[in-house]
Every structure is written in structure tokens, then in C-alpha cells.
Image (cartoon, rainbow over all chains, first blue to last red; front, side, top):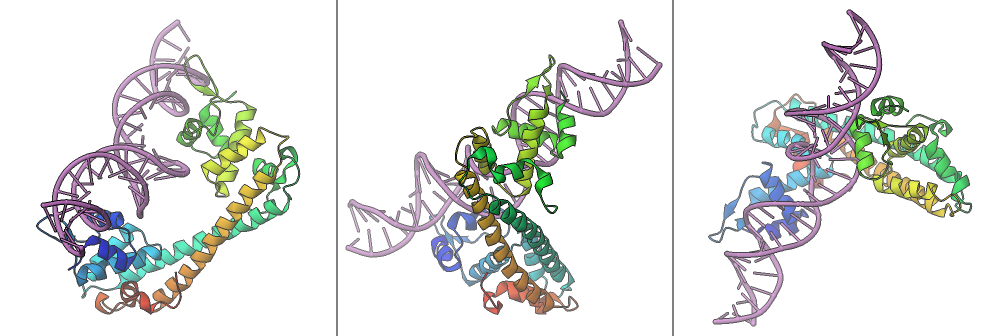
Length: 138
Length: 138
DNA sequence: ATACGATCTCTAGTGACTAGAGGTTCAAGA
DNA sequence: TCTTGAACCTCTAGTCACTAGAGATCGTAT
């Protein structure tokens, strides 16, 4: 049995974040000492590691709640879990695509100005003011 | 002179968002009719177009405030504007890099399970539970 | 016994909006 | 001129996933 601080150290999840996960129902409320402090066991550690890992992979709290719900039913089909993972993958790919377009546009805008003139003639500012100067949609 | 709804239509920025920009100081408070409704002119339209374009490129409200401040001083060096744009570009590149790592990991995880088994043996869930199954850092 | 770091709860703040309530104004048609 | 109804107004609260801080209590090492 260990404290919330110890759990925090072992998982690299901040203490207030752990309490937040508990409050939002992602993490079971653990036992308490007589003095009302939380005490965790191996199961709690495992659960939080799962959450942390999923968060690092960009899953939303809602998606993680769905995934942990599935974990509790070992006999259920895992199609739902793969669906959630696929949706997350699609989301990540969409974000990459969009960011890639932004990167190209920002590169172009940044290259257009050496930073040595005055703002009146600044290509960065001109580009932001006028979308027509852009080469692709974003 | 046109209404906030008309401005919204012309810029594709929602009405409450326009009011929010005004409240946060990004957009000057426009004239009002006797009945207290906002009326915009060409300058307001131009300003909001600038903001919209910068937001679409991922600049924060704070960065946009700095950029519009620069616009107001045509004689100032534009080095600051190029700095802001470069920082934004660096930020976008960092995000792409991170998302790319996530994409690879999610691909691997998704491929590992065809969704036809039961959750007990689901590779998606196993992968989330155990970071050691990951091939790269993320 | 005491010191002091860790923990507790609670409230409020972040960024960039979005939603809704409840009331007022504008513009077009009769 | 009157009426309708869409558009507008302000204000509060909610979103997501935390983060920060206040003020009080607890646990443990000396």
C-alpha cells in the first residue's frame, strides 16, 4: 500500500491529476487511512498506468472510460476496442495532414521575410492579412 | 456598415466568437446603432479576416494580439513578427513529429487485433496496459 | 514532542470558444 | 403604420483536461 505521492512518482502522473481521474470516474476510489489519506495497491497502479499510456497516445478521457469498461468484461467482443483505436488513429492522421499543410504555409510565409525591414512591408503580416497570398488551402 | 451577422457570414467566424474577440481585446469595439447593435465597416472586416487567417494557421490569441500590435506601428522592425511566425512554425513541426510517432504506434496496435476475439485477449487493450510492448517512445 | 513535508478538500483559473436563457431591435411585408 | 420574426443584446455557465492556490490536517523521522 502506498500514498498518492508514491503513485504519482511511479506513473509520472501528477497528484492533482490522479485525484481528477478519480473524481471523473476513471479511477476507482482507493482505500483511505484513518486520517483520510488515499492508499493504493498494485491494481490501482496498473489501472493508472493504463490510463497514462492511453492519454499519452492521445485517447480522450471518454474513450479511456469506454476502454476500461471493456476491460471489465473479458468475454465481450473486442471489436469495440479496435473501433476506438481505429478512430483515434484516424484522428491522429487527420491532424497530421492538417498540420502538414500549415507547416508548408508557415514555411513559405517565414521565408518571405528576413526580419530586417519594418512592419509596414513585412511579408509575414501581409500574408496573414491576405489569404489570397496563400498557395494552398488550410 | 453592416451587422455582426453579416460580418460573420463574410468571414466564416461565428457571431459569439466575434463578440469573444472583442471582449478579449483582439477586435476593437465597433460603433453601435441607437438600439445598441454593433455595426462594422471595412476596417473591422479586414481586421477580423486577419485574425481568422492567423487562427486558422494555429496562432494563439496572444500571438495574434502581439501581431496586431505590430501592425499598428508600421515603422517598427518586423523582426518580432518573423520571430512569432518562426515560433509558430517550430511548434507545428514539433506537433507533427509527436503525432507521427503516435500514428506509428497506433498503427501497430490496431494491426495487432482483428477485432474478432474477446477483450480478454485483445491486443489493443494489452498494448495500452503495457507500455513495454511499444516499439518507440511517445 | 516537535517539526515539516505530504496530504486533504475546495474554489477558481486556463484557452478558445459554445450553449442557453431571457429580453430587445431591426427590417420587410401587409 | 403595424406586425411579425429573424437577428441581435447581455449574462451565466459549460466544455476538456487539467493546474494553481488557500487553508487545514496527517504521517513520520528525529
